[in-house]
Length: 372
Image (tube, rainbow, N blue to C red; front, side):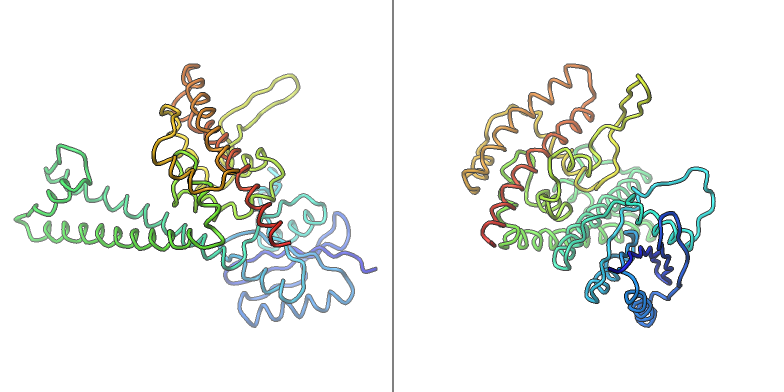
């Protein structure tokens, strides 16, 4: 039986540094390669030589270089894991950080079992996730463009007395004229930018709705849309970011993964809990908190919610109705105890993801039974 050899790769845009750990507590640098086609080929050649003597376990941190290297190594038959960077143990007294030290540290901690792996989506799911994230980026750009327009107009004495960015407001902007040619050009450029971003957003929304109706996503989207405060776009954010709900054995694990559990600083008999950890996926966390605000309304099934419930299968209708009453009660119990609105919304969002986990597990189990 071959001896295990744990390999840590410090992957950057330009280079890849490789460290090995043959035995507990020991690690060394064994190579540095360019992050190009030829450099990756040399890395694989090096790994193939090592595989003659050792059974290889490879890892590298998740980062801007994505999962391309992992997929290449998977095709070549190597066992490669992607590590969550935020959960790598840190030594506070160590003030020196280099690529070589990072690769050695990865190899040593990998052998010790101190690293946390992340879920790597397949290429199709990753493309959907990137599309959903692209919409989020365009939405942020549109918000900033509108802020720039408002600040520009206020700076020059123009203030709309009613709600901004309604049809009336847009008509008011289109009728504005500056006597100064430079200011008129600025107004035109800002206006064109907003119109362009709105067109991009509309196209992305259409594309995401088309994907939501495909066989892979349709059942999950309909089940999530049955919950108050969740529409197609919010449902696609949750599905695309979490990917596989069955990897969480209970809803508390998913809550912790999304950074929605309280932080804790306890020692001895002293127990202190603080704000949420915010260590997980910020997009899903934000979507859940936005949805949670809808549970402040009276827990009655509206016409829209009834239609959404009718689109789902009977076994997926129980949880949304149960959540409707429970989360409304949770929201106001926190408000009456003096908690801030945002704190109450976060707590409701944390419970909401528990209900969502239950619905998604039912669907994933059903799909697994059909495939088997």
